[in-house]
Length: 83
Image (tube, rainbow, N blue to C red; front, top):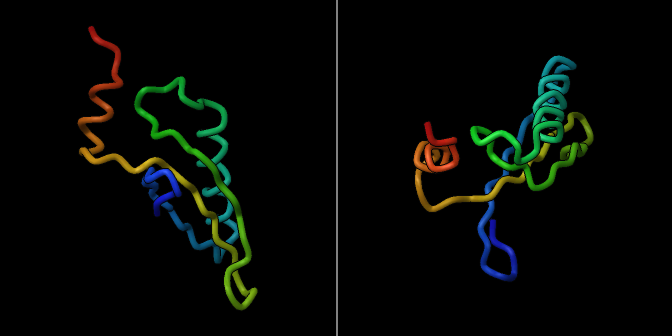
């Protein structure tokens, strides 16, 4: 995904067919909201929404993250506190 300013994003789609899947998705969202950018080992969650998928028979959790040009390991290592 890309916005009008050229920023690129990664959209994580979680299909929620069971109550347990919905619980896991909401827990992941909650962890991101609680920790925010205070944890250097957590990708920043830019936005999220739980929507009814096409046909109205199931839900999807949509989580929006920034898309980086480098590897996840390189980003997390760069964010880690120096020892």
